[in-house]
Amino acid sequence: MDKFRMVFQFLQSNQESFMNGICGIMALASAQMYSAFDFNCPCLPRYNLAYGLGILLVPPLILFLLGFVLNNNVSMLAEEWRRPQGQRGKDPAVLRYMFCSMAQRAMIAPTVWVSVTLLDGKCITCAFCTSVPVETLGNASHPSLSQEEMKRVLARIPCKDIYDGQELIANEVAIRYLRCISQALGWCFVLLMTMLAFLVRSLRPCFTQAAFLKSRYWSHYIDIERKLFDETCAEHARSFAKVCIQQFFEGMSTDLAATRCHLPRKAPADTGEATEKLLGITDQVTMNTALKSWHRCKPPLHLHSPACPSGNGWAGEGQPPTHTPAPRREVAAYYSRV
Image (cartoon, rainbow, N blue to C red; front, side, top):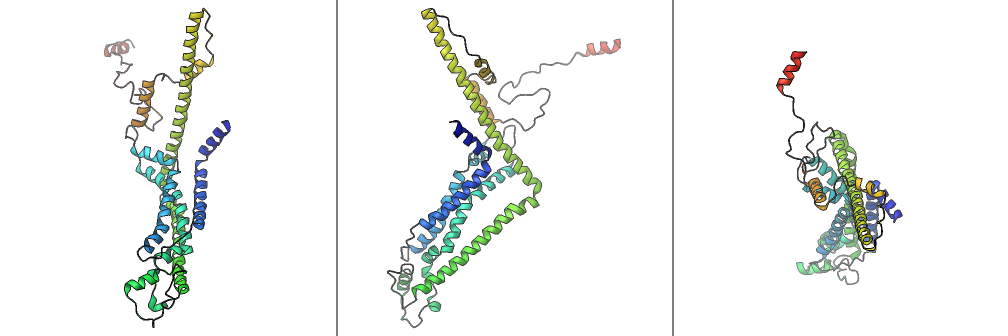
């Protein structure tokens, strides 16, 4: 159990590197999935386009959503976006920075899938085989066919076993033509994604350095604050459970001592230490109130509190100040003596 706890703490402390590794693994997995995928074009005019574009676009969408699901910061972003205003304002720039950071990592695997699919050329060949220019690449002396018959023949280009239009256009010529277009689109897509990543990662901080640093700092603060809050709650719950169990067994030992006329055992010395960790919150109602207050009214980001703090907003409000100014007559008498 201690080893698993150490591994979990290591992953939490190196969350960014861990997420980059997860994105890299997903990218490699997407390429491996495509290589292992059995592509079977239906070779029918009504279904070729839907099947080809579906294989090209639907898996990247799934991988993109999986990139968000595997990111631990999604719940933190949703919590920060949906929480009430309270005593702490919400900066839209910080939320945008957090969302863009997650989106950049989630886009890696879909980009790899689309790039590999376009460079392979099967999807484009299946989707647009009915759009091959027969007048340019085919046999112009072939007797004319109706539009429906022409589409039926061209739709069988990806399927060499059942293709019967060699007299109209050679199967190898049509496949090479469509694969050439697909590979050109693939390399253009890779170049576009590379240039976009370069602009986002390199040039954005140069133009908006102050806003970029501010957004990055407060996004790190929100992440660290949430982790520390979870750790504090876990420590409080552990101390709370420990005191409850000890009080239960102390009561049982007292009842047994009263029944059998034995002296109860002395309470362990670490009970007081566990009680100190409770920070005065020793019942369920108070703990629920504190948790609701943390969600609805987080403390302001101002460490230098005034002389008479008003608390966190859920206890001690509306109470009169404990220090009252001296009466004016005493002040006048003091100055008259001086």
